Amino acid sequence: MVAATGLSQSAGAWWEWVAILGAGFWAGMINVVVGSGTLVSFPVLLLCGYPPLVANISNTIGLVGGSLSGTIGYRRELRQNRSLARILLPASIVGGVGGSLALLVLPAEAFDTIVPVLIAGGVLMVVAGPLVQRRAARHADPAGRASTISTGRLGGIVGGVLVLGIYGGYFGAAQGILVVGLLSILTTESMQSLNALKNLLVMTVNLIAAIVFMLVAWNSIDWLAVALIASGATVGGIVGARVGRRLPSTLLRALIVVIGTAAIVNLLFLR
Image (cartoon, rainbow, N blue to C red; front, side, top):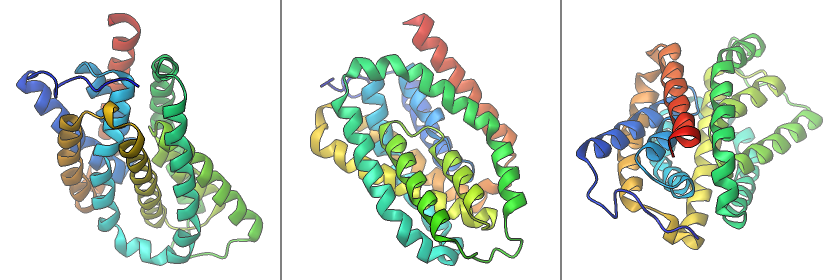
């Protein structure tokens, strides 16, 4: 298992601390508003010198606080779909366990190799995000009322949430966008209701993955990075739930694309 390296083993430049704290804030806010905050905080950890596996595990644990605060901020919308949430939560739990174990079982070299592809795929999903959200808006119930879901559709939703939970436990970038896309296709809920469900399911996957990592991959966790990401993300989740929805989504997406692209260039050409 890769030992944790980075700021916790060296003093680190003060600007790296500020960069990671700020990345955590933006990631927490973006996760609540759009999804895909991992594509801000994870690449910043890479740019600060963390090995990909350590960065991924530390980032996942750190983002739990932001996901939790964002979910609490959306509790009003979440009450509209309590029944559906109770059905989908077990799928997220199982998926989170499966994905996090897959990350630990597969060789670290395999994750290092696939990281640029995962980041690039996540960036493309973020760029395509407006199309997903427009589709969700077209299919939404304007009044935000819960619709009746057939047994077949419910099975498709549960299966899709399980698969996305596995992906989220393994890496997680743009998981929120994929969840919104899935729910928008198979339900007719309002956009805010979809976002509330997305926040709950992503938070659950992150929490389960974090527990698994702490139980079986303690040496691959950089706790200073976790603390910085968690501090920023928790505040970012609160801001995202309250005022983040008013920020231009194009600004948030542009930030993700720039940082994600910089991380890919760093991994492929500068290391």
